[in-house]
Amino acid sequence: MEAAEPPVSPISIPKIREARDLVYNGTVDPVNNGSAPANTLQAPRNKKQKQRRISPFTIVLLLLGGAVSSVLYIGNILAVGHLMVQVNQLQLKHQQILNQQELLKAHINRLAGLERIQQLAQDQLGLRNPKQIPLWMEIDPERVDEVNKIFQQKMEQRR
Image (cartoon, rainbow, N blue to C red; front, side, top):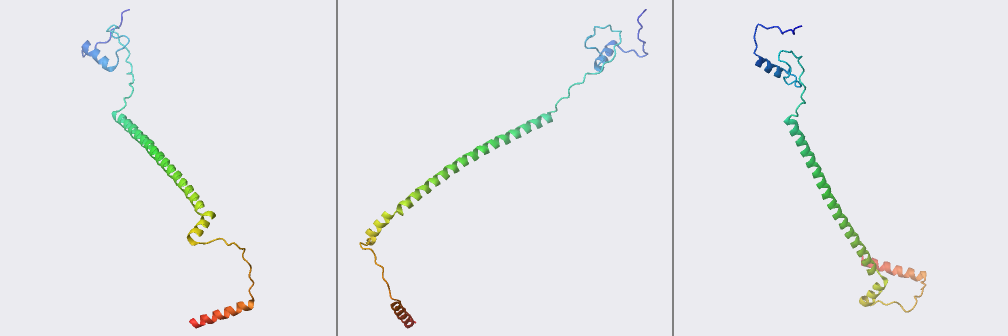
């Protein structure tokens, strides 16, 4: 049996153009690479789907997003570092104030000492401790009344 030749079309298409059309239509078998006889028909194959390219706009957006996030992250790190420095300075200042407070308390205790006050009273004011024990005095109530009357009379005379 003879191989059936394909029917001849009324329009003749050159073999070169036919081969070119097959390549662009995806009908050429890449495995055969043209090793099949030219007169055999091959079943057309679907084109392999190409992976979709990432658009430049998407790449720019990703790069811009990465840059913004890195700037924010670095800014956050710098802000935290600055706050840590401030906290350290404030802790040192607080410690200095506590030390000054303790020094002032010690100074107040030293100045309020009884021995120091007695020494100042003797040196500057001439005060001395009594050598005798004080005695209790009893006053007559009649005598107190007399003194009050005299005091009231003097007050009335001034008015």
